[in-house]
Amino acid sequence: MLITTTPTIEGHPIRQYHGVVTGEAIIGANFLKDMFAAVRDIVGGRAGAYEKTLRKARETAFADMEAAALELGANAIVAVDIDYEVLGETNGMLMVAVSGTAVSVG
Image (tube, rainbow, N blue to C red; front, side, top):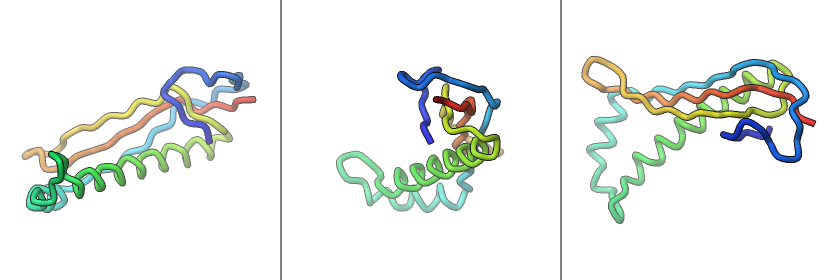
């Protein structure tokens, strides 16, 4: 499946629009506590374990969005937007949300 942040895919004309598709992944408070406790894992100013978990959450959100597009009969997703939000009363959860337009391209 072709997935892009641009509204079109060069060389692949859009034949049909199927609608907006989304995917979300939420990381709970325990994860954040564990990650901040693992800050000693920092190499070169980067928290490797934290980045790895955020990457997995983003990949999960993208996989959910792609599955929704496939259900609609699409073979591509255009105009993808990625958002990160802190949630909860004590900001103890992080949500990764992705959205885009499912299309069929030629």
